[in-house]
Length: 124
Image 1 (cartoon, rainbow, N blue to C red):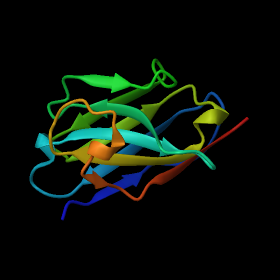
Image 2: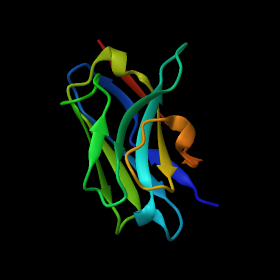
Image 3: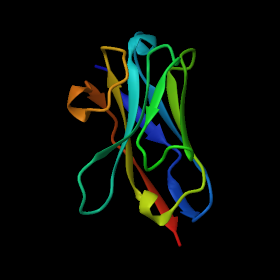
C-alpha cells in the first residue's frame, strides 16, 4: 500500500511563506503524477497544483498561480509545495495525492492515493 505523509504546515502571517513536503512510500513514485489539494472550513476540497511524473509540466489553480510552486525530487520520493505571499484565504488543510496515470490531473476523483493532510493557517 502506498503511503503519503505531508509535513511543513503551520501558522504564518499574511505575506509569509511555507514549504509543504509530501513523502511517498514505495518503488513507483517516479511514475506518479502528484497533486496538492486543500480544504478550508465549511468548503469542499479544491485543486491547488499538479505536476507530471517527470516533473516537466505543472499546472496551478488561478487562485495560487504566481504565488505557489510545485516541485518534486524523484530520488527522494518527495513532492513539495512552496507557498509565498500567503493570504488568509489560503488557510486550509492541504493534502497531497498520487495518480498512477502520470499526467497533469486536476480532478481529485482520478487520484489513487491520498495523505492525511497538514494544516496551514494564515493570520491577517
